[in-house]
Structure formats: structure tokens, C-alpha cells
Image 1 (tube, rainbow, N blue to C red):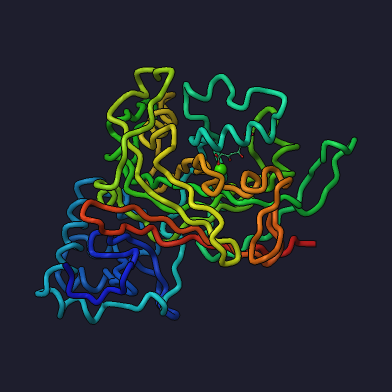
Image 2: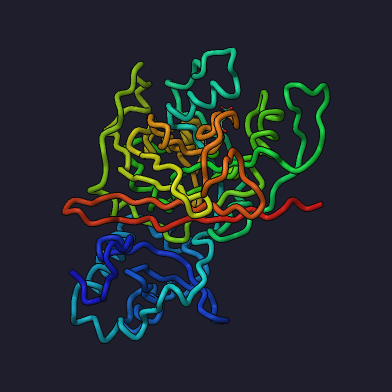
Length: 400
Ligand SMILES: O=C(O)/C=C/C(=O)CC(=O)CC(=O)O
Ligand SMILES: [Ca+2]
Ligand SMILES: [Mg+2]
């Protein structure tokens, strides 16, 4: 399959070839493609082959590449596949294979706008029960439109960035007035992020069928959430400071093309959705693993998500809002039906009332020094693993 040595079970086999931005020593950041324990430094390989646009890879972000659109994404993928499969390319590529352990991975693209959805029925039901115990868990709109909110693009950070515990207002139900201080209910949210390449025109909605023309690929997302800040501030306008302090994403952008054999039909939508949300709808079949201080605590499955990524894009643009190169929209927390498939600690510990055991300790929310690592992968036809790599972050103490 490839002339490059691959470790067993690598997330980055010859069918994946995700793109990311790396820094090697004090050299300028540039674009690489992951393969096994290495990356291919693409700029020198492309310029030696005198490819049009080889300057594209000599960039500190993927944005210029993303803006090229689907035909160029496909051509680039075919070129990459040939580089790693065809032994004739060995002499050209081998000098530019860099061990991934030798580089620092950066934010892969400059994030334009950031939207966060709420597309898991299990998660929305669980949070409804926890935040609004006296009402129906799912609000009347939930099965008619993919609920979402606009987040803060400027605080989307690279995997590995420390997350400073946010401070803010919180008012426990038993208190009469709010107090200010470090969040005591700091949480994670396991999500899949969709990366927009091709922009759309202001005033013109993007149809469900045009999803693959606009979205290049996916990243892992951890949408850190301060549940105490959130519970006090969110009514009636939705999430604000409880979410905006940081959102971490994985460094490798996996293309939709690499995932095309790893999809499942959408769960049945009942009641039927409006025509602009109808189409041939699929979900990527990704399984996540959540490690809390090294211990596996949950394995959320993407396949059960109620709203598809194409419906999210159609909905976020149906009023004529345009999308831009570098837009990121996230699925919302991925939670499965089983207890050990929940994608947040507020669900895993049921609001803090049912602690879970992590490395022998009873735990509910995040403590300073805790580290959370989320991985994810799909299985392509033929059994090859298409890995998304990982997104990781450690909690640093609040600023006093
Ligand atoms: O139900 C609520 O009031 C709040 C829900 C969330 O915190 C979820 C959110 O950020 C969207 C998601 O990740 O699913
Ligand atoms: Ca979220
Ligand atoms: Mg966030």
C-alpha cells in the first residue's frame, strides 16, 4: 500500500493523509501531510515537482488551500496518494519525511466564524433534565431545526494549549445573589468540527446537497464549558462567557474525501423536517475516546447524532448568511445512549451527584492540573482506520 514504514494501528495510514501546520525548530511554519509517525513537508516536495501553486504549502495556515475548492482538494489528494503509494516517488519524498515527534503542531487554519450546534438528542435530553428539571427536556423547536449559537472564533486554540480556569459570575440555586470567582464546574464537550473551504454568497442559502462543495473536512473539538457560569447567564440569549474562554481543536484536518466510505445513514427524523433540510443525509461513522488524566472514561459514537452536518450548514445559511473560508461549525456534544458514551462530565457525573472513578479517585468536574485528551477514528471499507489524531488540553489555575 505504501513504501513508507507504518506502525501497527496508526491513525494516519495511506488512505487518510490529513493536512496540518507544523513548526520545525525556528523555521517558518508550513503545511504537512501526516503519514504514520511522520509528516511529509509538502512545500519542498511540490516545488521540486514544479507543481502549480506549490507556494500554497509554504504557508502558516491552510486557508489559501481551503479556498481553492473541491476540484483542487481532489487533485491534491490524488497527488498525495501517489506520493505515498508509488515507490517511484521515494527519492523525491524521503528526504522530506519529518518525524512528527520533532515538530510542534499549530492551529491548522485561521478560524473565521465559529458556530456550535446541539445535534445530539441524547445530550440535549440529558442537559435539559439537568438544567431544566421542571420542564420537558427537549424544547418544542429541537426536532424542527438544528439548534445552535455563534461562538467566539478568536478563542479557538491549538491542541496542547493550556486552558486557564475561567472566572465569572455564578449563583447556586440556594444563594440569593451571585458571586464572582473561578468556575467550580469546569467541563469538557466532545464534538466534531466541520471546516469550511469554499465561501458562499451573501443572500444565497447553501443547500443540503452542496455540503461537500463547501466543507473540506473535520477536526476534533473540545468545547470547554463552565457549567456554573453557564447556568446563571444563559437565559434568554444562550451560551456566552461559560463557553467563550477557549475551544480546543485537533491539529490534523481529515478530508471528507478520506471519510467518504465511513458514513452511516442518519437516524430517522420524526416529525419530518421542512424541505430545505431534506436530502440524502449521512453522518460520518466516528468513534471518540475520552481520556481523563490518562484513564479512558467514555466512548461517544457520532453515528447516533440526530442532525447531519449538511443540515447544519443548510440551516445556518438559510436566512442568507454567507460562509467564509476558515469557518468552523461544531456538531455539539456527542453523547450516545449508554452511560459510558456520554460526551461531557456533567452528564457522566449526572450534575456532580454521581461521581465517577478516575485513577482511583471520585471525580465530577475538572481540577487544576487535569488533562483531557480526546481521540477519534472511523473505519473505511477494507478495514483501514481513518484516525483524527487527538485534541488535548490541561487545566491551569485561574488568574487571581
Ligand atoms: O441545554 C442547555 O441549556 C445547554 C446546552 C449546552 O451546554 C450544549 C452546547 O454547548 C451545545 C452542545 O455542545 O451540544
Ligand atoms: Ca458545545
Ligand atoms: Mg467553548
